[in-house]
Image 1 (cartoon, chains in turn blue, cyan):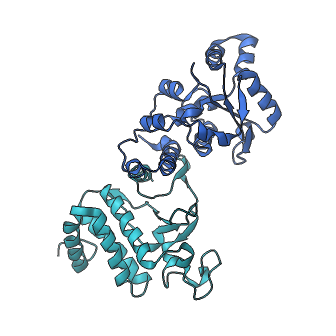
Image 2 (cartoon, rainbow over the protein chains, first blue to last red):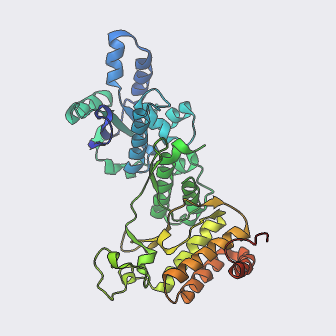
Image 3 (cartoon, each protein chain N blue to C red):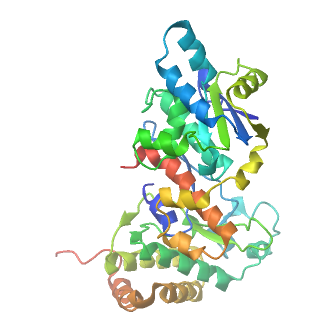
Amino acid sequence: MESLCYPQFDSRHSQVHIALFRNVSNAAAVKARIIAASTAEGEFGEKEREAVNFAFVEARMITSKLHLETAIYQAILAESQNGLRTRTVHSEILYNLNPTHNITEAIRRYGVSEGTADVLVVRIDSPDLSSSTVEQKMKEAVKGDIVPLSELSQVTDWATIKKYHKLNNELAIKEAANNPSREHAVVDNIVVTSVAMKSVMG
Amino acid sequence: MCWLLGLSRSGVNVPGVRMVDASEGLLGIEWIEGSSVKRLLPSGAEDSEEGVDGVSAEDQNPLDAFQLSVDALMGLIGVEIAKMHLADIVHGDLTTSNMMLRRPSSPDSTPELVLIDFGLSYHSTLVEDKAVDLYVLERAFASTHPDSEPMFASVLEAYGKKMGKEWTALRRRLDDVRLRGRKRSMVG
């Protein structure tokens, strides 16, 4: 797990924790739990919401750590200005990753689903919440192996990312077509810029 | 700012965007490791900022650090402007300080010319607007770098090659613009 800090934001959401889980065996259960927790009532509801108080991101759809960080940054920015377009700062990350403004689609494409094997788990919170506590909570929610974020490059599904961002007919992609590492760099650059600029795109 | 995404999708080298805070009017873009083209060409460097990254001595050619000839650099500039114009974007303020040369990220890659500062840019399909864009750069070359004629000629050569069939009309219009200046004739 990696932790980073954005001291320019209010401490209630200045600390970010990111972990990459591979070989995840309970993706369907995680998804069901998130849905149930959102409507659960009373003390049990509070407990369940805290247990899944993360962004669970389909790792296949992420091109780089910078890609995820950009979505995280814009989500914290929106929350700090009371401008969230979804219910929580964590769901806002999924919304920011999707090129359209359709929230259901964003959750379907970038959230966990039954077949998810690799998940990026993100927690945005105050620095008062220790990294070890966060990691413990992540492990309680997700059954899988925590691996270094650098393994993300083995997981990325470039073809689907190009499809969702409608990049296949773009000149930049065609020019790099015969050089995979160049093409990946070009796609990464475009999707990172898309995420950063989403709030001002029509 | 809104042109940056479209330009990068069209394969034009422009800075990647890192954050946008619309309510504060903030735009965060990537750090480009390298130098402005202005500082890489003769007389471009002002005394206060002589040398690139403090490594070059008085009379050392700063381009040596990029293993690039002046002519090759002019070629990169021409190609990048052509790619932008083929995407029907007019820069509006082309100067050698609004271009950067990015240091290669690995030993087997080459330096990359990056166009920056799209604050005056707009969408246009007009030959006139693209010709004025080139003319503005020509004037910038002439006022910033001594003996710039051969340099700008190399820029145009690479530009024309990349533009293809659009170039004939553009070259003719550039000649017109040179005669009358940047502004179209006004009444009176």
